[in-house]
Image (cartoon, rainbow, N blue to C red):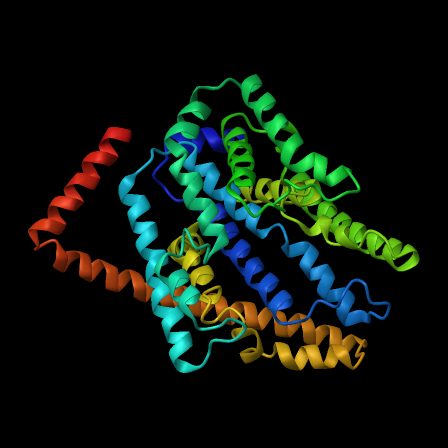
Length: 391
């Protein structure tokens, strides 16, 4: 990983097809998580009867739960050597706001909206998507990006030992403690906050600057990912068994599936390290790197409040859930679940990529038109000057 890091520092402005592919894979995993969870395809862990379809669904959940940490590792890997840019922050906010308003209103006006009331709070969430936590991941990301002038500068100047101590203390507070103690901690946000992504950001910075000898071989990263996910699955069902036998531990049944659990964290690092060693060249590399910049649009589209609880049933989740409720547990039912989930994730991914390509085309044309207006042009120039100050 470290040798590749040095090469990347020389060619900093070039895209990395291996990590672009991982970005796509991680976003597909995010869609799978939302299809299973919001499509009612994850059986209640407190229930005694669980067929093969239910077990398979939880196994899929265990292998995809690393997605958000992986996406943040990729972001941190590049952000730690980048400068804070006011223009980038504005572009990101406009992208989020566009999706929030356009598809939030579209979902409400077309009747696609479900699971959420169309009221004043809903409209506030569309108008202020960051501060109203419309997209929790991007709220955490934007707040972390606002800290980049401080954190990024510190990371570049810290020694290897300083970073090790800082990361160790943070992981101890936000990861290790909750993973070991058999209680629910009041300060534990389950990884849904900026502080956890600061931990992930620093981990990515450490991997980029110093590497980890154990992860130098691609197979070790893949083994860490696979082993971590299997342990997540095994730990979840062990806690389920304890709950079924004793009636206790119900609050901790899904603790192994939380973003800041040590198993999820290590599995994400393993998958990230495996892809860092991957080599992709030629036409496949160009195609992957052409698609990857639009992956955020996949998240912004399918997690919009106007569509968040509807698209799963459009793509067959209700049919699969009905089969699961009837106790279907043969091989055909399991294959149906896997195929249905895979096709749904692919369909959402494709729609999100195409939609964001359209959004960018609109933004580029609109930008060109607005540059003819003096006020807009002056604001753009001020943003560029601010970028240069931080650069």
